[in-house]
Structure formats: C-alpha cells, structure tokens
Length: 431
Ligand code: PGA
Ligand code: ZN
View 1: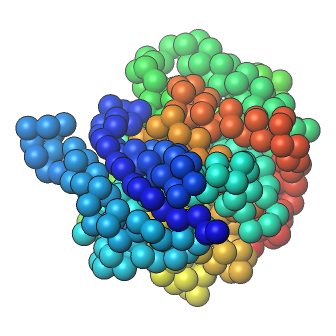
View 2: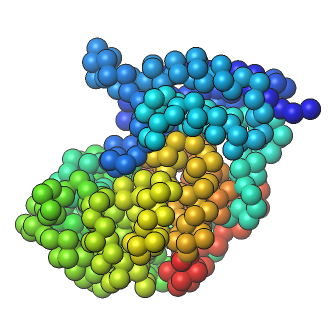
View 3: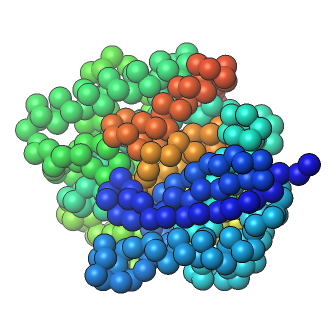
C-alpha cells in the first residue's frame, strides 16, 4: 500500500540569530510524523528564491513567517493531502506548480522547502532508514568540511570586507580526526588573535571568531599561522578557503576594499585574488566577484581554475539556469548548494547533477541563520557532493550537523575520503 501524506502543519520558530523561520511537520498515512526546520540567510543573492516575510512591523521588525506558515496550513495542505509521499519529485512538482512563480514569491520558498524536507524525513522514519539512505540515489559520500574560523563582512560587523576565512582539513585518516584537528586550529586562532592584540568582537553569525583585524590579508596570514602553530602542514594537510561575498562591497562598477585602502576594477580584483592564492594555501574562492560580473568571472576562471576551486554562491544561487549559463560560458568551476536558495529538494538534487555532468564541484552549504535541524549533513552525504560548508565548530545549530556526520561515520560505517580532496576536487576529477 502506498504511503500518503495525511497532514501538514507549519509554525513559526526562531533561527540561530533570533529571527523567525519555519518548522513543518508532515504526518503520513501510517501515522509517522516528522519535522523539518528551514534555514535562513543574511548575505542573500538577488537571484535567490524568495523567503516570504510578513512585513508586519509590529512583530519581529517585519520578519515574521506567519503568512508562510498559513500557506502550508491552507493551500499546500489542501493540495498535498492524499498525495504519494514516496514520490519526492511529484511532491516537489506539485509545490512548484501551486506556487506558480519563478522565484517562489507567492507561497514562499521557506514554506515550500519546509514541506519538501518534512515529507522526505517522514518517509525515512516510516521506512526506519537513515535519512541519507532515503535521499540517496546511490554512492553516498561522507563530505569534507569547509570550516569557518574567522568572519568579516555582513556576518561580523563588516570591519573587513571578506565574509569567511575557512579551513579545509583534508589530510587526515577519518572525519573524526579531521574534526579534532579543526577544533585545535580554531582554538590556536583564538590565542593568536589575543596575542597579536586584536579586539575580539564576540562570536560571529556562523560561530567563528569576529576579530577587528586590520585587513583581509591579515586574516589570511593569521589563519596560515594558526594551521602551522597547531602543528599541521598548510597545503598538504589543511588548506584555506575564502568566501569573498564580493557582491556586498561592489558598487558602481568597482570593488571597494576600505580595509586595504583600495578601490579595484574587476580585473584588478582578479589580480589581487591570484596574488593571494600564491602567497597563502588558498584552494577555494567563493563569490570572488559580483553576482552579475560575468566577464570578471570568465577572467578569474581563465586565470585560476586550473588549481583553485572557484565557487559560485550569490553568483549561481543554486539555480539550474544560472549554473547552466556558467558552465556554457566557462565561468567558475564549482557551485555552492543551498536548499533554500532554490526551494525544493528535487531542484537541489538537480543542481548537484548538473554540476556533476558539467564537471563542476558542488559544496552543500548551511545558511548563516540555522536551526538545530541536522538535515544538511544527510543531504550532503546523499548527494555524493564530497564537500560541506556548515560554519564554525561552536554553537549547536552548527554542531548538530558536524555531530550528525560523526554519527554517520561511527554508526553507519561511511568511509571518509578526505585524502582524495586535493586530487579529486583540485586535480580535475571534480571538473
Ligand atoms: P548567508 O551566508 O547564509 O548569510 O547567505 C552564507 C554564505 O554566504 O555562504
Ligand atoms: Zn557565500
């Protein structure tokens, strides 16, 4: 007998920044009920699917999600009740058709995604399967994490412009060992910040350090020192990734780096990034250029794609049409995959597949506003993408995902392939 959707119920909850988001419960015909919680970004790209907010300034400064919840509890529930829960593609298609807009602005991508994920989790619980198995189409892979250590930009008071300085701990025998080394490097980075006399501004939005550094380059130097002082080899064991998030300091055709006292054209920005990959063990650059600077992206790709992962976040917004154009025009070589940028699970998988067939790498990513839901860890594993970006290794909305990956390694025997990171992703296997 087929498993059908018996009920859907959504309500407003708060994310890790204390801003409203949604929880959705799906109940199936066999009585199984499961809940999913929806993430929420701050440095959002213009081309993202629309996160529906109430706009009622008397509640949560207009950011309430009661309307999105009412869409789940009304029209979405009406259409999906009695629908086959095990056909995720058909569930998502029904959601997309009911919304009927290109950016999901009618019902809200937050409403759609909550339903999509809650149904998937309810099916996995009904089958008594780990979630990654239910989601996977074969070849699940425990991902290599890209871990935030220092933050700037919109996530840490904007004293330096680049948003994230991260490490990729690839040269370890297991995911558990890589995580232990990461905690050590995070702690050493904190000691270095204090030793060098920088003011610590508290914890940044994704749980990393948010120091008042004097420049973006100082952050790269500090991170490289933290790797070495913690006893690891930069480049061989641990590499650096940056999320430039450059759309947020691009205005009127130029990139303004106040902390470096420079205003750069697109070509000069490319040269700066090239020079920093030569000086520091940077192997991955996210949003190095503005989200609509296609010519700049082409130039950056020509200069760096041979040995650097060039990752589009605001540039691609997990959107198959934008990724298709990137592949066709030789822009970037990797895509950041955020479920709520596109709004359903099926479309998220579609983007991962498109990346694979275009020889682009894929990094499954959390948002700066997260919840205690660990769905992302199973999703990243199920896609076989090989990489995950969760934020830092403090704060439980991040640890929920890191800890779930520990569980997948310990309890479900999934093998970690960190040692293949450099050859697979950077040696051409990922593209
Ligand atoms: P966001 O930031 O969730 O605020 O968009 C994360 C990122 O830019 O990668
Ligand atoms: Zn980003």
